Amino acid sequence: MAIETLRTSQMEAAEILGIDFAEFEEVQRPKMTHLGSIAIAGVGEFDAYRAHSGPDDLIGKGGIRLAPYDGENGLRAAEGLAREMYAKLALRGHHETFRGAKGLINAEGRLMSHDQRAEVMKQYAELMDHAGFAGYDKDVPAGDVGTNGLSDDYAEKYAELHPEDEFKQAVITGKSVEHGGLESRPGATGWGVYSSHVEMMNLNGVDRATVAVQGFGNVGAWYAYHAANDPEKRISVNAISDRYSLLYTDHEDGLPINETILREIGDNGRFAEKYPWYRGDKLSAVKAVIDVIRPDMAGQVILKPNPHEILEYEADYLVPAALGNVITEKNADKIGAKYGIIEAANGPMTLRAHQMLAHERGIDILPDIVANGGGVDCSIAEWRANVDAARFENGHPETEEVQNQLRENSKNLVIALHKELKSADVKDLRTAAALISTEAIAGQLGLLKGRFTTTS
Ligand code: NAD
Image (tube, rainbow, N blue to C red):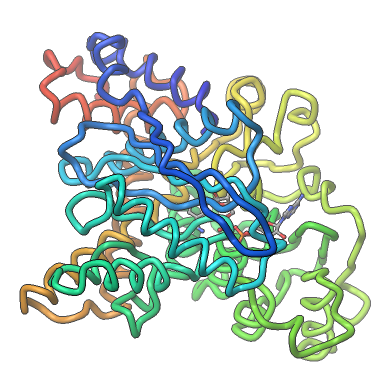
């Protein structure tokens, strides 16, 4: 959610719960720390920050973004993401141990080589250590836009600085399996989005659905893969967009997103290195694979150079999984989704657009803090496994065990939100999510004076 949306939702929730909003706001007001600067030879020098939201004695949890930001506005947006993370942790019951956090490095990671980005991550670990934040019981970051796949570099630098720390593996999550990461982490957010979507369909009384997905990166590609391979064939992914194009089909099977497409093209796959003709348009590569694996669909899979049209594509559900603020009051009336929108990206919709769609058109909108929170469960499972391993307890959890737990959590959360809708005070899923997270945080901090019963 954009910060204004989150704040408005929490304000509404505080009123329903009868808690003092000013007091609640004070507890989670994000604190931004300028960690210092990172210098990369031949590229430049960049400011690095870490924002925290929640009490200081809790462990920070949140990604490190390597992307240019828009001055003060960018810093405020990162603070908003830390606060959103705190709400996300509370929704999944992790708020007694963790508080929200977000890292920010003001540089264009996309234009750097892998080694340069790895060096950025190592210097970030040093700055975190210098600020007193690094450590398994202080702040446990993760990869994010521009730093996905670089958690091992952070962990290695920390281990170099603190070779004696027995919990050194648990200082960051999203690591490779060799460094103590979980096999299920790369696909966890997409798996959570898919699990939430199936439950939304159950609650909407929809047996089979078509879907349009915006973005074919980590979240979008894994979501599309799970949806397209739904064991009961309840979902067909009929349209996908990415930065340069839109791929769609009217075929009843939808686009056949298989393992090859997912791993080689979707989640930052290595397609470009293997095929010189590929110019970075992921979906032209997806189409090339589909043309080979499904010759019977020839002529029915169409590639268009108009990615923005995905929002207007007429499908039962829309899954925005790329960028923030893509649905605004200017295009909300053109959205093609019939039943619902699953917010897989962070803050894909403005507050006004949400009002237009949820209240004026009656579309069910599953908020980002619920839909894309699956990665949080998986990250915390990784942290716990690393802490336990250092204490010689338990083993590494099985992928299936982590995935089942994540599916249960996502499912139960969607059911809990819909239950809240029975109250006249709760007019949409966004308010229901804010109500559950606000109640959890306020309860833990002793701000809850006694809840007004909202469910019947
Ligand atoms: P990513 O960089 O792996 O993927 C984003 C994709 O969107 C890329 O393929 C990119 O080419 C594409 N894209 C860029 N501009 C586009 C446009 N105009 N139209 C369509 N596609 C476009 O990033 P990600 O990790 O998948 O994150 C996507 C969103 O989900 C972000 O808002 C992120 O904050 C949020 N999110 C991610 C995670 C996670 O675990 N990765 C967790 C929670 C939330």
